[in-house]
Length: 587
Image 1 (cartoon, rainbow, N blue to C red):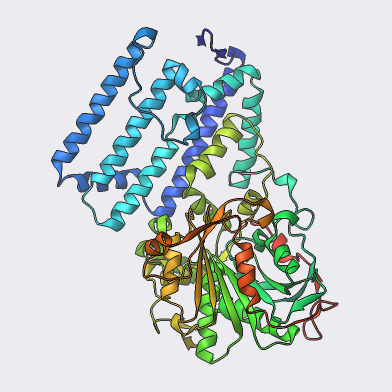
Image 2 (cartoon, rainbow, N blue to C red):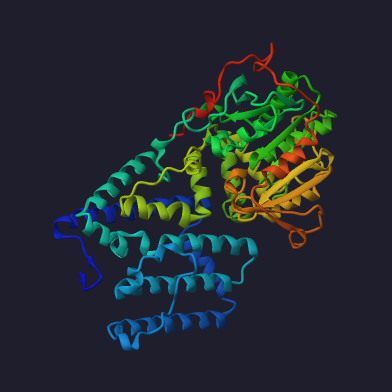
């Protein structure tokens, strides 16, 4: 195929076999991705079709209206295609991509009639299915799941995702004489062996070489975690240290990436002794570990060690994502014991109330949780790769299909990006711990119910947590919706400061002040709803870190000379940071 004046040619015949091979292989890989997402949701295309048909049966008029519009748009599209060569009568497009849709950014999607037709037909089909889902008369939980699964299929079916229907891929293959196709096949083979999509140049990073570099030492370890104490970078430090509890579904170094964006390094530079929990990437033999053990032998143990090493009665504690949920649970346990171990708490993108956990809820229903509980009874772990695919599916176009096109169809190498390197370095979770967590949070929302749960031998109540708390949410968070994070202000019993940062779950947190990027919102009040809070909030330029560090200083205690060595007699240095546990990979 040749389009005069567009410098657009199909691959030569000698490269057709390579082209066909990549097309077939990429289709199979796409099918595997879709199947894995469908299996995680416990849904398939036939189930979706049955739910869609049943939901529309009570509104035949709306169904007929959507069908009539669908046929009319396709007929108009065909007529436009027939007039494509007549520049004087160039028709307006029937369907256009949403603003910011990068899949159809290349000019060939508009200038070449065949690909313009593919694009518009796909958009018409996508919007028809979306409207059909919205028109269904279903209960909201069922409709939410149907909506999410339909969008997974819509995203997967985009013509940009396949070599034979992507003009950029064909043009590049012709220009490189098939080299782009050969590279793509090699990338596809490598990722198929790893069982995941490469999102970054993983050879560009190494833990302890150019990420996780803040100096320190491991001063304690058990089967669950290592505890790192970082070396002071100031002559004096606040008496009360800060204990950081990262999410256990990823490695801790999201808080200690490179020197210019390390949250740990920033806090140390502000005069704090910082301790970091480095969760273990648990092997299959440790699938029996429980939620209570993560609370007791992880969070509470870390607080006790920090108090011992620094010789203080109280410490400050910070939790990120599920690490924040663990911190909330641990503080409730300590409150039940009458143990005031914490002077303050910081919760970053954390849910304590799971009444609206966003799109993640589509994966978790009674059947899914029961299966996880049956699996947990047999031992074993939830694989990190499965968790990574689940989170990626929440933003499939950005975190799945973008890389399918660039890595495989175009044969490009993904760029080096530290956040995505961390994102690919997932960890396994004990089956028993995970089953307990999803039942009592996502499914039944028991953590917020006073006295409902017993943890570590104590009946817990989040309202008994009376320490001052700084709660940070991020406005575009697809994992912890910010309005759900705001609900924590109604659960905890102490003085609370709520702050909203721009961007998403990770980029909104990892935002060093020197970059002078993004913004955050402040409001000293805590009205009943998140919308009311935002309506009265003030937008502030730049990072939220300085606001938080000023707040933390109120709870740091007196300043004293920085310790010369890490640990103490009870907890001597075992090995340099970042330690062994963080280097263990799922692959």
